[in-house]
Amino acid sequence: MSFIQLIILAIIQGLAELLPVSSSAHVVVAEKLMGLDPSAPEMTLILVMLHTGTMLAVILYFWNDWRKTYFESAAALKSFLWHLILATALTGIIGEAIIKLIEKTLFRNVPHAEVEDLFSHLELIAPALACAGVLIIVAGLRRKHEDPNDVHATKRLTTAQAGLIGIVQGFCLPFRGFSRSGATISTGMLAGVSKFRAETFSFALAVVLTPIVVGREVLRLFHAQAGGVAAGVGFSLVGAVFAFLAGLLALRWLSRWLESGRWHYFGIYCLIAAIAVFVLHRMGY
Image (cartoon, rainbow, N blue to C red; front, side, top):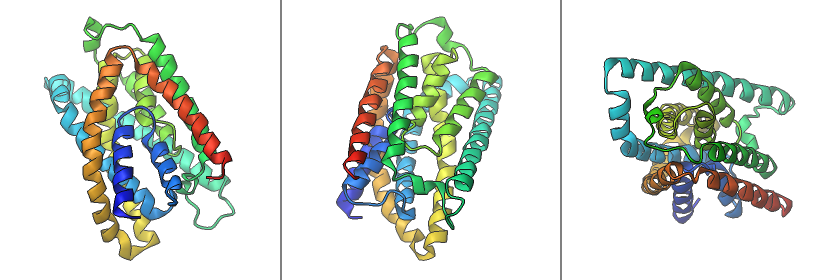
């Protein structure tokens, strides 16, 4: 991969990761259009390192909201940490179960096959994008007229709601195209969580999940080509910086549309993107 290609992917990642439109789907399509292999270990590592850049953007953007909402008292912090642990644990259980199921069924006769081998299949990304789009549209239209200043916006997340969000996040791990932020925020909204709470909790989960995924991909690269880990990480860090800057711009866009009742527009975009991805698949990409 050239430096220019890395920067292009970083900007796409930064803009799309923090919008509910599946950054991984956009990056995979961009990689294929540039003649790169999205399923290669070094490519999946770059993708995850770009996620690290956007994670830092999330921390910077939401820190004040988290501090005021979740760190206001010992009780609020305890509840927040419990919900984070619960949701993340359920994500890991569901995600790993699906990954193992895929590897033991679809790849049962393929030596050393991994779920990442599916990441280059546009015929799988298209329906995942469509599913995310439908979920976002339903949630957006149901909560379109919610007043962001309503008293319910300060109501705390329940254990059941946090668990449900964690379960849905688990389905996002193995399927490129099923937007993590879109799925978790929409699930929270449909479960009765305020838009503000759904957004801040969803991105808090992203901060917890990203280091775990980064570690998984570093190990995968190490097993594939032990000598390329340091070089791969160093090269990817450059892209992470650009992803960070683009991510800050994307977060302002997301918050503005979520609060103003335009969340469903992201779902419409996902449906259009799903059609475009399917057309690219039919064209041989």
